Image (cartoon, rainbow, N blue to C red):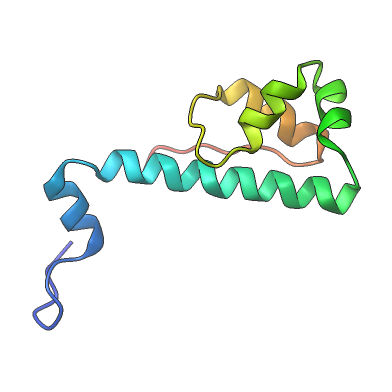
Length: 94
C-alpha cells in the first residue's frame, strides 16, 4: 500500500516491514470467527457442552474453537462448529 504523506505508512505496511503481518492477520481472522461462533451460539441458546456434543468432540476442543487467542484449530473443526450453528466457513485466496 502507498504511504500516506500526512500520516506515514499504513498499519499493514508497518507490520509487513516488521515481519509480523501474516501473524497479525491470522490472529484477527481467528478472533472474528470465535466471536461469530459465540454470537451464533448465544442466538441459538447453545451451551459449550451442547455444542461439543453436537460436534462429536470434547468441551476442551470447543474451548479452543471459541478462544480468540488459540490459533491451533483445524479448518475441519471450524467447519463442524459452524455447521452446528447453521453457518459455514468460507476461505479464499486473494
